[in-house]
Length: 459
Ligand code: PMP
Image (cartoon, rainbow, N blue to C red; front, side, top):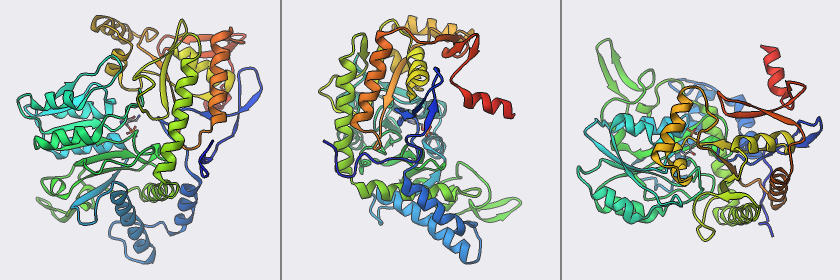
């Protein structure tokens, strides 16, 4: 059974692409956790706005005013989407993506190496490296299934020195696990510690946590791939000190040796902002809210169950992460006995026209734990990778879905994986040790990648 409005086709769904055997199939993306195609409403909103596009900062004239209005409406829509009351005192900073938003905040908090930030081993690099550079990280460990409890977080928060911030993912990009945010946020607030939720994965699937002090997310993971993301936080944080980026628009008064920073959020808006990205973001917010979270969550829970059950039933496939009783996003990471993850992904792409992700998913410490590698084993593979051989890097295959995926799509994915596990490849594959990737070859030449070939020829 499907929900009335779901699945929703995305722009480009069903495009036919060439396969290694010379046939064509409709492309099926099971890589929503990396990036999503646009919703039709997003594209429509962008097209409708483009004739009105004009300068945002300081322009005078009807179109400029329309542009300022559009930009500021997007900020307000982002705040409401994050369940902030208009009088909450929070601001929405429009930036490029989650990575930029987190770097932004790591600068904005004015941290130094003596400061501690509590985070977890389950984080994406984009929610680890900015903190590791700005401060000292204290990590919450996970169990074999990749989960941790609010008590584990509380124990890390109770260590000394007291941490300046807790930063935690809203949903894992490797296991799809949803950490118990309300309890985790409450544990931090009980100790007077503010919380950033990295909502990159959460944002297209569930409502954002109202209790988080800071939120960061990306438009391209919520059907608005026009280069805008959001950082939300209390105005007072952005009213102190200089902004992350300095330049035109960030300062209200300037002399050669004097600067008065603009009030937030304009203080964070140095340079010409991505107005089209902001318009797309607002349209995606409207479209998702139009479908409604209960229907989205219901549909995706069903897809998640089908994916988990179906994959677990294929001989030789081992799922990573929490067991079947734990709720997850429609995202499953797995390994196939005796078949490198990179080959599984290459074969799905070349033989089935299905796009998935493989490797470490920018979360190598977490994947290492999920795979049960010892620290010595992990070090040895990293050492070989540094010397140019990535074939032994810890790796798995990830399939991830969004609102456009149907039960039929899941069935197509599962039968593709069944074929792949059961049979020999119909074409030969060669591996490039420097990337660890496989590609199909016929008579010594790459096949099934005419786009790449075309682009090379055009250069
Ligand atoms: N955090 C998580 C959990 C992610 O999955 C990602 C993207 N894969 C990011 C942060 C970074 O997002 P972006 O690339 O849009 O900056």
